[in-house]
Amino acid sequence: MSKKKVAIFISGGGSNMLQLLDSMQGTQAASPVLVVSNDPNAAGLARAAQRGVATGAVDHKPFGQDRAAFEAKISDLLAPYQPDIICLAGFMRILSADFVAVWAGKILNIHPSLLPKYKGLHTHARAIKAGDAEAGCSVHQVTADLDDGPILGQAKLSIQPADTPESLSQRVLRLEHKLYPAVLTRFVRDDLRPVFITG
Ligand code: GAR
Image (cartoon, rainbow, N blue to C red; front, side, top):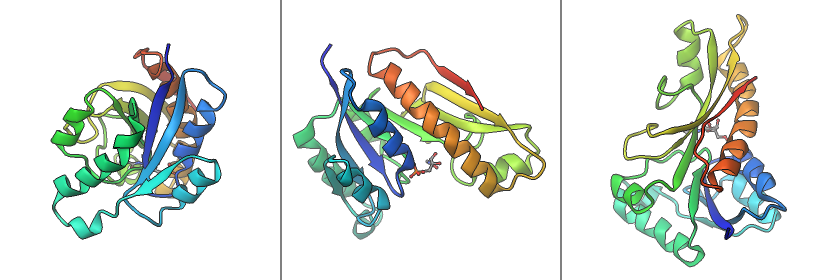
């Protein structure tokens, strides 16, 4: 089995990205080739570089509504690395149907809710407001529809009476750090059986 080349897209601190990098270290199945951000100042870029991973950024702001032009620049960054898999890890831009079609079946995303519940933003506040007993995170294959696509793993925990969106977000993030590497480890072996974790 040839080593799968993994690109990781981030927008912020990149704590999930770091967990993915750790999970690939010393394995034969996958290696990180590039970390990309839409924010040149994303803290995760320096963290990836410290670990010897190539980084690149395309600031989305100058492109305004021109998603195709922004994504063309992203594609230019990716081209020399020829990734087999793209992991969205806190990447806060919506990818167009055209971009997703080029990478069909090869893009994974982590989302901080128990999908199909709470697509989009403010997931933890929405779960608390709804009175849900459980919250969690999902890893799924990316399709043209936002936070949709086949689910490859979910991790969940109980919402406590004292939970705030912030406390819940921190607790779920710790589960994200377990779930995403577990899913990627299977995915690089073409194993699409979903991973389930209870925190
Ligand atoms: C994570 O909680 C991730 O699930 C979320 O952003 C955070 C990034 O944290 N992603 C989304 O909301 C995507 N819609 P990180 O930069 O520390 O990995």
